[in-house]
Image 1: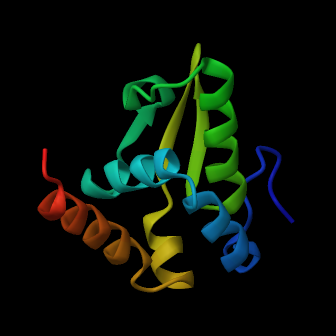
Image 2: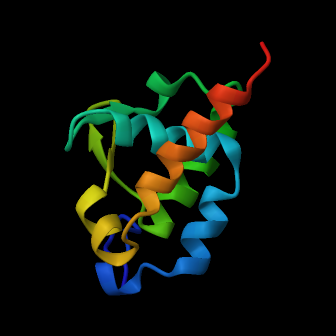
Length: 112
């Protein structure tokens, strides 16, 4: 059962929900940015500078949280997001490496 904040436990992280959350390119970008940072790094939602409204940002982070990809903690007036790196690697080994490879491939093939 998810905790009070909507974070599923390790055994409750479902592949379908994770893939659904990662289907959106902005959410994949958030996960890639967190994965590229140091383990345990906590960032505010606004630090990702997503080109969408505040309500849409909230929706994206809810999808990431409820799928189990991130953990969010209230810190004063903001919410901090941390990648659940160890849980993701335990439950879906290699997934973060695939996301990093996608970014590398996209950068290599980008004509701009």
